[in-house]
Image (tube, rainbow, N blue to C red; front, side):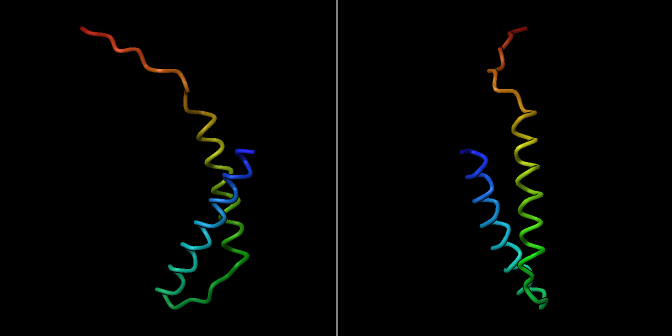
Length: 62
């Protein structure tokens, strides 16, 4: 379920960003490019989340 939400939010945020950037630069909005970017971002977020440790860091006093 978390993968679904990750894709949903990356889809929305990447499409919003692509729309705004294309409007500011005067280029036509391309749905296909934004969708491909959202899939890539979703994969990167899932990879980064799996690499980062979940264990708390022990504080050692020197």
